[in-house]
Length: 113
Length: 113
Length: 113
Image (cartoon, rainbow over all chains, first blue to last red; front, top):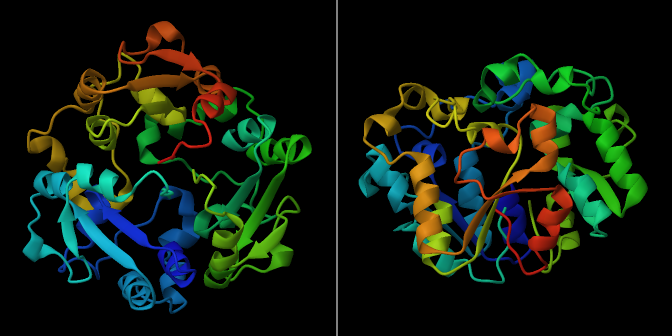
Protein backbone atom coordinates (compact mmCIF):
# COMPACT_ATOMS: atom_id res chain seq x y z
CA UNK A 1 0.00 0.00 0.00
CA UNK A 2 2.95 2.30 0.64
CA UNK A 3 4.23 1.49 -2.84
CA UNK A 4 0.90 2.43 -4.42
CA UNK A 5 0.78 5.64 -2.38
CA UNK A 6 4.30 6.70 -3.29
CA UNK A 7 3.74 5.88 -6.97
CA UNK A 8 0.54 7.94 -6.95
CA UNK A 9 2.50 10.86 -5.50
CA UNK A 10 4.97 10.69 -8.40
CA UNK A 11 7.86 9.24 -6.42
CA UNK A 12 10.07 6.63 -8.05
CA UNK A 13 10.03 3.42 -6.02
CA UNK A 14 12.50 0.52 -5.88
CA UNK A 15 11.20 -2.52 -4.06
CA UNK A 16 14.07 -4.82 -3.08
CA UNK A 17 13.00 -8.35 -2.16
CA UNK A 18 15.09 -10.27 0.34
CA UNK A 19 14.74 -13.55 2.23
CA UNK A 20 11.14 -14.58 2.98
CA UNK A 21 9.71 -11.55 1.24
CA UNK A 22 11.41 -12.84 -1.90
CA UNK A 23 10.10 -16.33 -1.23
CA UNK A 24 6.55 -14.93 -1.24
CA UNK A 25 7.09 -13.73 -4.86
CA UNK A 26 7.73 -17.27 -6.20
CA UNK A 27 5.09 -17.75 -8.85
CA UNK A 28 3.82 -20.96 -7.24
CA UNK A 29 3.51 -19.36 -3.81
CA UNK A 30 1.93 -15.97 -4.35
CA UNK A 31 -1.48 -17.41 -3.46
CA UNK A 32 -0.21 -19.16 -0.36
CA UNK A 33 -1.19 -17.89 3.07
CA UNK A 34 2.13 -16.73 4.48
CA UNK A 35 0.87 -16.19 7.96
CA UNK A 36 0.97 -13.00 9.95
CA UNK A 37 3.13 -11.81 12.79
CA UNK A 38 2.11 -12.82 16.34
CA UNK A 39 1.50 -9.15 17.05
CA UNK A 40 -1.53 -9.45 14.74
CA UNK A 41 -3.29 -11.39 17.49
CA UNK A 42 -6.48 -13.35 17.05
CA UNK A 43 -7.93 -11.20 14.29
CA UNK A 44 -4.75 -11.74 12.32
CA UNK A 45 -4.87 -15.48 12.81
CA UNK A 46 -8.48 -15.54 11.62
CA UNK A 47 -7.53 -13.71 8.45
CA UNK A 48 -9.81 -10.77 9.09
CA UNK A 49 -8.25 -8.70 6.32
CA UNK A 50 -8.62 -11.41 3.68
CA UNK A 51 -12.22 -12.01 4.65
CA UNK A 52 -13.10 -8.40 4.00
CA UNK A 53 -12.36 -8.77 0.32
CA UNK A 54 -9.08 -6.93 0.25
CA UNK A 55 -7.23 -6.85 -3.05
CA UNK A 56 -4.50 -9.50 -3.39
CA UNK A 57 -1.14 -7.94 -2.52
CA UNK A 58 0.34 -8.86 -5.90
CA UNK A 59 -2.39 -6.80 -7.59
CA UNK A 60 -1.42 -3.80 -5.45
CA UNK A 61 2.10 -4.02 -6.86
CA UNK A 62 0.72 -4.35 -10.40
CA UNK A 63 -1.42 -1.25 -9.85
CA UNK A 64 1.61 0.64 -8.53
CA UNK A 65 3.57 -0.26 -11.67
CA UNK A 66 0.67 0.90 -13.86
CA UNK A 67 0.45 4.33 -12.27
CA UNK A 68 4.07 5.19 -11.47
CA UNK A 69 7.77 4.59 -11.81
CA UNK A 70 8.07 1.38 -9.83
CA UNK A 71 10.61 -1.41 -10.15
CA UNK A 72 10.55 -4.63 -8.17
CA UNK A 73 13.86 -6.42 -7.90
CA UNK A 74 14.99 -9.68 -6.36
CA UNK A 75 18.11 -9.83 -4.18
CA UNK A 76 20.71 -12.05 -5.88
CA UNK A 77 22.24 -13.16 -2.57
CA UNK A 78 18.84 -14.16 -1.18
CA UNK A 79 18.05 -16.14 -4.33
CA UNK A 80 21.21 -18.16 -3.87
CA UNK A 81 20.51 -18.80 -0.18
CA UNK A 82 16.95 -19.93 -0.84
CA UNK A 83 17.71 -21.84 -4.06
CA UNK A 84 15.42 -19.66 -6.16
CA UNK A 85 16.01 -19.03 -9.90
CA UNK A 86 14.71 -16.16 -12.03
CA UNK A 87 12.26 -18.57 -13.68
CA UNK A 88 10.64 -19.27 -10.30
CA UNK A 89 9.60 -15.66 -9.80
CA UNK A 90 6.24 -14.05 -10.53
CA UNK A 91 6.41 -11.81 -13.66
CA UNK A 92 5.76 -8.72 -11.54
CA UNK A 93 9.44 -9.00 -10.54
CA UNK A 94 11.58 -7.00 -12.96
CA UNK A 95 15.21 -7.92 -12.40
CA UNK A 96 17.71 -9.62 -10.15
CA UNK A 97 19.98 -7.17 -8.34
CA UNK A 98 22.95 -7.67 -6.05
CA UNK A 99 22.99 -5.76 -2.77
CA UNK A 100 25.70 -3.46 -4.16
CA UNK A 101 23.50 -2.48 -7.10
CA UNK A 102 20.61 -1.81 -4.73
CA UNK A 103 22.75 0.69 -2.81
CA UNK A 104 23.94 2.28 -6.05
CA UNK A 105 20.44 2.76 -7.44
CA UNK A 106 19.15 4.03 -4.10
CA UNK A 107 21.40 7.06 -4.10
CA UNK A 108 22.10 9.53 -1.34
CA UNK A 109 18.80 11.32 -1.80
CA UNK A 110 16.74 8.17 -1.42
CA UNK A 111 14.54 7.39 1.55
CA UNK A 112 14.32 3.84 2.83
CA UNK A 113 11.19 2.38 4.34
CA UNK B 1 11.60 4.82 22.62
CA UNK B 2 12.93 6.10 19.28
CA UNK B 3 10.06 8.59 19.21
CA UNK B 4 10.95 9.90 22.68
CA UNK B 5 14.63 10.12 21.71
CA UNK B 6 13.95 12.00 18.48
CA UNK B 7 11.53 14.37 20.21
CA UNK B 8 14.12 15.07 22.93
CA UNK B 9 16.63 15.93 20.19
CA UNK B 10 14.23 18.50 18.74
CA UNK B 11 13.29 16.51 15.64
CA UNK B 12 9.69 16.64 14.44
CA UNK B 13 8.21 13.13 14.38
CA UNK B 14 5.26 11.70 12.45
CA UNK B 15 4.17 8.28 13.61
CA UNK B 16 2.02 6.59 10.98
CA UNK B 17 0.00 3.62 12.25
CA UNK B 18 -0.82 0.82 9.84
CA UNK B 19 -2.35 -2.64 10.10
CA UNK B 20 -1.71 -4.39 13.43
CA UNK B 21 0.21 -1.46 14.84
CA UNK B 22 -2.97 0.55 14.36
CA UNK B 23 -5.02 -2.23 15.92
CA UNK B 24 -2.88 -1.94 19.05
CA UNK B 25 -3.98 1.72 19.44
CA UNK B 26 -7.70 0.81 19.75
CA UNK B 27 -8.72 2.23 23.12
CA UNK B 28 -10.06 -1.12 24.33
CA UNK B 29 -6.87 -2.96 23.35
CA UNK B 30 -3.98 -0.79 24.50
CA UNK B 31 -3.66 -2.88 27.65
CA UNK B 32 -3.81 -6.17 25.81
CA UNK B 33 -0.70 -8.31 25.54
CA UNK B 34 0.02 -8.23 21.81
CA UNK B 35 2.65 -10.89 21.91
CA UNK B 36 6.20 -10.59 20.74
CA UNK B 37 8.01 -11.82 17.68
CA UNK B 38 9.40 -15.39 17.77
CA UNK B 39 12.87 -13.88 17.59
CA UNK B 40 12.30 -12.69 21.16
CA UNK B 41 12.72 -16.28 22.31
CA UNK B 42 11.83 -17.58 25.75
CA UNK B 43 12.51 -14.33 27.60
CA UNK B 44 10.14 -12.58 25.26
CA UNK B 45 7.44 -15.19 25.79
CA UNK B 46 7.80 -14.83 29.55
CA UNK B 47 7.30 -11.08 29.29
CA UNK B 48 10.67 -10.23 30.83
CA UNK B 49 10.40 -6.57 29.85
CA UNK B 50 6.94 -6.09 31.38
CA UNK B 51 8.01 -7.79 34.59
CA UNK B 52 10.80 -5.30 35.08
CA UNK B 53 8.35 -2.46 35.52
CA UNK B 54 8.89 -0.83 32.17
CA UNK B 55 6.67 2.13 31.36
CA UNK B 56 3.59 1.24 29.29
CA UNK B 57 4.28 1.99 25.64
CA UNK B 58 1.33 4.37 25.37
CA UNK B 59 2.89 6.50 28.12
CA UNK B 60 6.11 6.72 26.12
CA UNK B 61 4.16 8.24 23.24
CA UNK B 62 2.44 10.65 25.63
CA UNK B 63 5.83 11.71 27.03
CA UNK B 64 7.14 12.23 23.50
CA UNK B 65 4.18 14.50 22.69
CA UNK B 66 4.81 16.48 25.89
CA UNK B 67 8.44 17.19 25.13
CA UNK B 68 8.50 17.62 21.35
CA UNK B 69 6.77 18.09 18.04
CA UNK B 70 5.16 14.67 17.66
CA UNK B 71 2.00 13.69 15.78
CA UNK B 72 0.51 10.21 15.74
CA UNK B 73 -1.74 9.46 12.82
CA UNK B 74 -3.85 6.50 11.81
CA UNK B 75 -3.75 5.15 8.25
CA UNK B 76 -7.18 5.60 6.64
CA UNK B 77 -6.76 2.57 4.38
CA UNK B 78 -5.82 0.35 7.33
CA UNK B 79 -8.83 1.55 9.31
CA UNK B 80 -11.12 0.50 6.48
CA UNK B 81 -9.48 -2.92 6.16
CA UNK B 82 -9.70 -3.59 9.89
CA UNK B 83 -13.14 -2.03 10.41
CA UNK B 84 -11.85 0.58 12.85
CA UNK B 85 -13.49 4.00 13.29
CA UNK B 86 -11.95 7.18 14.71
CA UNK B 87 -14.01 6.71 17.89
CA UNK B 88 -12.32 3.36 18.52
CA UNK B 89 -8.87 4.90 18.82
CA UNK B 90 -6.99 5.93 21.96
CA UNK B 91 -6.90 9.74 22.36
CA UNK B 92 -3.12 9.76 21.88
CA UNK B 93 -3.89 9.37 18.16
CA UNK B 94 -4.21 12.80 16.55
CA UNK B 95 -5.71 12.38 13.10
CA UNK B 96 -6.61 9.96 10.33
CA UNK B 97 -4.36 10.31 7.30
CA UNK B 98 -4.41 8.64 3.90
CA UNK B 99 -1.19 7.16 2.61
CA UNK B 100 -0.88 10.03 0.11
CA UNK B 101 -1.02 12.62 2.92
CA UNK B 102 1.63 10.67 4.83
CA UNK B 103 3.99 10.93 1.86
CA UNK B 104 3.20 14.63 1.44
CA UNK B 105 3.88 15.47 5.08
CA UNK B 106 7.03 13.35 5.13
CA UNK B 107 8.81 15.46 2.53
CA UNK B 108 12.03 14.82 0.69
CA UNK B 109 14.17 15.74 3.67
CA UNK B 110 12.46 13.27 5.99
CA UNK B 111 14.06 10.13 7.31
CA UNK B 112 11.98 6.98 7.68
CA UNK B 113 12.52 4.45 10.44
CA UNK C 1 24.00 -8.60 4.32
CA UNK C 2 22.87 -5.00 3.85
CA UNK C 3 25.67 -3.93 6.20
CA UNK C 4 28.27 -5.79 4.14
CA UNK C 5 26.88 -4.32 0.92
CA UNK C 6 26.86 -0.75 2.23
CA UNK C 7 30.38 -1.12 3.66
CA UNK C 8 31.62 -2.47 0.31
CA UNK C 9 30.13 0.59 -1.38
CA UNK C 10 32.10 2.90 0.91
CA UNK C 11 29.16 4.04 3.00
CA UNK C 12 29.65 4.51 6.75
CA UNK C 13 27.25 2.29 8.67
CA UNK C 14 25.96 2.54 12.24
CA UNK C 15 24.16 -0.56 13.45
CA UNK C 16 22.04 0.22 16.51
CA UNK C 17 20.94 -2.83 18.48
CA UNK C 18 17.68 -2.67 20.38
CA UNK C 19 15.49 -5.15 22.27
CA UNK C 20 15.66 -8.72 20.94
CA UNK C 21 18.20 -7.83 18.29
CA UNK C 22 20.47 -6.77 21.13
CA UNK C 23 19.67 -9.95 23.03
CA UNK C 24 20.95 -11.95 20.04
CA UNK C 25 24.38 -10.29 20.43
CA UNK C 26 24.91 -11.64 23.96
CA UNK C 27 28.11 -13.64 23.73
CA UNK C 28 26.47 -16.76 25.16
CA UNK C 29 23.56 -16.59 22.70
CA UNK C 30 25.04 -15.78 19.32
CA UNK C 31 24.96 -19.47 18.39
CA UNK C 32 21.41 -19.96 19.56
CA UNK C 33 18.64 -20.48 17.04
CA UNK C 34 16.53 -17.36 17.46
CA UNK C 35 13.68 -18.58 15.35
CA UNK C 36 12.28 -16.95 12.28
CA UNK C 37 9.14 -14.96 11.64
CA UNK C 38 5.96 -16.89 10.84
CA UNK C 39 6.03 -15.33 7.37
CA UNK C 40 9.04 -17.58 6.70
CA UNK C 41 6.66 -20.54 6.52
CA UNK C 42 7.72 -24.18 6.51
CA UNK C 43 11.08 -23.64 4.86
CA UNK C 44 11.93 -21.12 7.54
CA UNK C 45 10.92 -23.47 10.33
CA UNK C 46 13.09 -26.20 8.83
CA UNK C 47 16.09 -23.89 8.81
CA UNK C 48 16.60 -24.10 5.05
CA UNK C 49 19.07 -21.22 5.03
CA UNK C 50 21.28 -22.69 7.79
CA UNK C 51 21.32 -26.06 6.08
CA UNK C 52 22.74 -24.55 2.92
CA UNK C 53 25.95 -23.64 4.67
CA UNK C 54 25.33 -19.94 4.95
CA UNK C 55 27.93 -17.92 6.83
CA UNK C 56 27.01 -17.25 10.48
CA UNK C 57 25.48 -13.80 10.78
CA UNK C 58 28.09 -12.65 13.28
CA UNK C 59 30.79 -13.35 10.68
CA UNK C 60 28.96 -11.14 8.19
CA UNK C 61 29.23 -8.25 10.65
CA UNK C 62 32.92 -9.02 11.21
CA UNK C 63 33.49 -8.99 7.44
CA UNK C 64 31.68 -5.67 7.15
CA UNK C 65 33.91 -4.15 9.84
CA UNK C 66 37.00 -5.45 8.02
CA UNK C 67 36.11 -3.86 4.70
CA UNK C 68 34.45 -0.60 5.70
CA UNK C 69 33.57 2.05 8.24
CA UNK C 70 31.11 0.12 10.38
CA UNK C 71 30.25 0.55 14.04
CA UNK C 72 27.90 -1.69 15.98
CA UNK C 73 26.41 -0.15 19.09
CA UNK C 74 24.12 -1.39 21.83
CA UNK C 75 21.14 0.69 22.96
CA UNK C 76 21.64 1.70 26.60
CA UNK C 77 17.91 1.79 27.34
CA UNK C 78 17.42 -1.71 25.90
CA UNK C 79 20.31 -3.04 28.00
CA UNK C 80 18.65 -1.76 31.15
CA UNK C 81 15.27 -3.25 30.20
CA UNK C 82 16.77 -6.64 29.42
CA UNK C 83 19.28 -6.67 32.29
CA UNK C 84 22.29 -6.90 29.94
CA UNK C 85 25.72 -5.51 30.85
CA UNK C 86 28.56 -4.55 28.49
CA UNK C 87 30.46 -7.67 29.59
CA UNK C 88 27.63 -9.87 28.32
CA UNK C 89 28.01 -8.68 24.74
CA UNK C 90 29.93 -10.29 21.89
CA UNK C 91 33.17 -8.38 21.12
CA UNK C 92 31.84 -7.41 17.69
CA UNK C 93 29.78 -4.79 19.56
CA UNK C 94 31.75 -1.54 19.82
CA UNK C 95 30.04 0.73 22.32
CA UNK C 96 26.91 1.39 24.33
CA UNK C 97 24.94 4.36 23.06
CA UNK C 98 21.84 6.08 24.34
CA UNK C 99 19.02 6.74 21.87
CA UNK C 100 19.91 10.46 21.91
CA UNK C 101 23.49 9.71 20.83
CA UNK C 102 22.18 7.46 18.07
CA UNK C 103 20.14 10.33 16.65
CA UNK C 104 23.10 12.70 16.95
CA UNK C 105 25.50 10.40 15.12
CA UNK C 106 22.92 9.60 12.47
CA UNK C 107 22.71 13.16 11.24
CA UNK C 108 20.28 14.76 8.84
CA UNK C 109 21.95 13.24 5.79
CA UNK C 110 21.70 9.69 7.11
CA UNK C 111 19.41 7.06 5.69
CA UNK C 112 17.70 4.62 8.02
CA UNK C 113 16.96 1.04 7.07
